[in-house]
Length: 461
Ligand code: TYD
Ligand code: MG
Image (tube, rainbow, N blue to C red; front, side):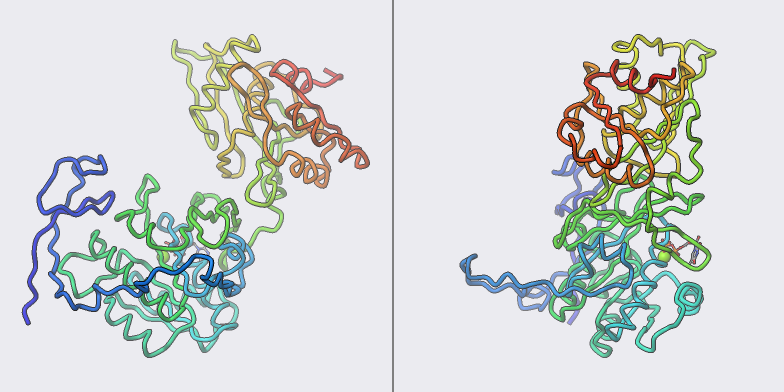
């Protein structure tokens, strides 16, 4: 029977389908409609059917079903997934090209093949030989159960799964796959959506966990429609900089755990290595007791991470002072500089300010505000920080230092790493109170930016 097709217009942002072209989509985006051909499915087509039962069930009576988790053999990956890979779950792993998505996945696939049995790695991007070369580099011993398939046709992939019955399936990447049921090109909205749906059915019906690789655009958005993000159980994002070895894996969505955990890796000659002592990595070549250098910390998931913030101020030559920031949010930096100007009596208007978070870390937390402020102060006044001191706290617009979460845990970690004191919000300091008494670790609680500067200078200056 000849397939009947019709033309629709699909928004590249939200996946909304319209029978006619619209300049602005209902999601508000402009010029995102792309013409696409879709094939009319007959009423009884299997793709129209859903596997959900049609009778409502009392929520109380639904079994809570403990998730069966599979150990991926990579502790940091398990942690981000919420304690291992859940059977039947769909995980999207996104990241820029060359960041190491295929590397971490082949490492996990090799481990799972050893412990669980058959694993199928489908690649639409590389040939079987290329994948073998990578695997030889990163996996010490390859299991007999690790299968590889260079294929982009979804129907063939489904057939291969039928035959192999894998315990774990990898699709690298969703943008290269296509289904015969549609005329549109691989990577188009309707293809990606349909492949996503087919994979979900495959995974849920056979209880196979699936990893799907997805590319991101330059701005960090998932290429293709957001629709796959809604479909899957977990969305992981792999970030890092090419010329830095550090790679951070983060969960943006996780139906089986928190999204606040991060996994830290280092890209080496033979694959990704897990980082055990994350704070140690960032503090390695710290220019301690140098002007403009302050050590601070953020709490990532279930552990504190200590790192160095550096600032440099220099008189501006032209009328317009420059502010450059790496790792610190630009708007926050401007706010902190305004507070220093207005509340701490520093003239910033004629100063170029450069701020850098050492080690390629991108902390997304206001708890580093005070460290940024004091680093700028330190560079401008030529005053170094007290020895072995850590600084945390959020700076408010009135110059007050606001409390941060998990300050107690950061203090414990700092004491463990050999720090002697911590400048922190007064409220946090009062709460921690005598808890650290025995360690001899000093807490310097500060209420506002003046007190912080006093505490920073210490007695000797
Ligand atoms: P890859 O996993 O292919 O990235 P993605 O799938 O995200 O595009 O990793 C590519 C980069 O990682 C490549 O530039 C080389 C580097 N690399 C190493 O440094 N060590 C290794 O062991 C491997 C496999 C790759
Ligand atoms: Mg790849």
